[in-house]
Length: 86
Image 1 (spheres, rainbow, N blue to C red):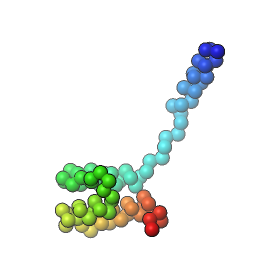
Image 2 (cartoon, rainbow, N blue to C red):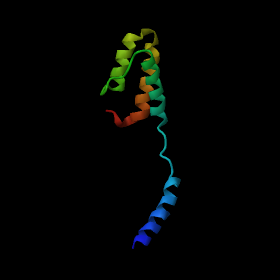
Image 3 (spheres, rainbow, N blue to C red):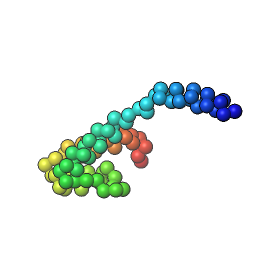
Image 4 (cartoon, helix red, strand yellow):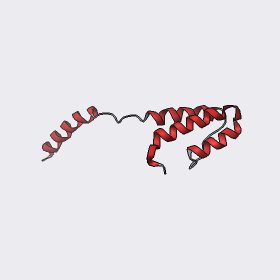
């Protein structure tokens, strides 16, 4: 019995490293890069704060970049949530 379990474990361990990696969410990766840049400027997203609320708060602190912040956030929300929002 122990030999059988050992053989099955060995066979499974050979196949596990060859699983397909999960697809990357490119939208989330790019938005997180945006958040890191803002954090370096001293503006961090609060826990539970949505993208839209964070953008509004950030635009008040960076008025010269308000248009870019608005556009990046709008694209993120559209790409990430699409027609799921009502």
